[in-house]
Length: 474
Image (tube, rainbow, N blue to C red):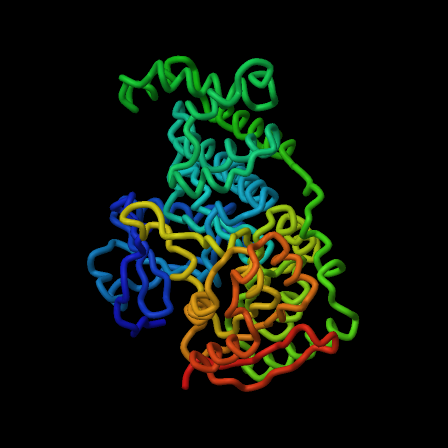
């Protein structure tokens, strides 16, 4: 099929491999391959394992297209077209179970590739995405023929962006997300060695993948990659040993499951003060708004908690991104969605008062949340008071940010919790008197209607919360 859309842009994250570049033509996601990468692709497509991975949905949908029908296609020996991921997320937005599942998929793919004579030259967590509650490998250009006597080239990346964060969470109870967010290349071995001293040195996976790995890196710091490969070949390193190493990593990662712990927000639906009548009215209001939107392509559920309204939205939308600040709540939601094989709801961990910024090279290699968040419908239920009263964000700034999350012509469903509501009073309890004089329904409605077109509103039966459905535009 011809691709008629003009070339839109080069993918900012696709610059590290000059022979293998992702770019966009309209809605199409394309990958240009140089002569060597094209030879690797043709050999890969002829294997038995790769088409099976495609059929199982473990590798993103990929097909070759005619380079002469692609803008700038003459630059490449071959061009591939990939299935578009509905919403691109980053590892520092995943729960621990999501990161673990991504690591296990990467290892499974490698275990299936090696016997067929292929390996992956990268091991980064960024080579995976999620389609709902299922991980998928997206870096088709990472596959290359394996050379006997050489180690897995992606091992260091795998450790730094997948294994080390899992070790920190499983063994120390640390939140890995701030480290991954701060360092695009992941956690360095030296950082890990400083944390795993004393008896911690003996925890599963630490002796081999932290201390031995770090020592080997230090010993070979002055050696070239070819020198290290030659040493390994001379020592008898074989494909069987490579398989054994990957199987060992797989066993280790399977042991690093850390079930969610108790959380203040885990039972929010029962403790937030809603009556049964409030919940029923709120759910009907949300369903009506989604129906009016005519099956939206993307819905953002901001402050999703246990996913109650994300599941409602999934009945009426193509895809839903459920954003929640509490990692334990997101982990619980992800496990429930995974058990249901739900591929239309993507749960993410994010503090809405500190959403993911752009990162990596020039701040655009990993797009910030604002650059990814253009949704047809945004649900901001029980969010405004937490930002305005809990985090001191001015009401105008809250509404401006919600407007930024909406696509042109999109809709916003927003809930205003009145100052007399029990949850609002709880948030105000430890604040100085008079700190929020403008937090009033009249002020909120004036700000709302100055930015959006009001379509509907509903006072919930409890009398302390109001729902609004508004549209972007005058």
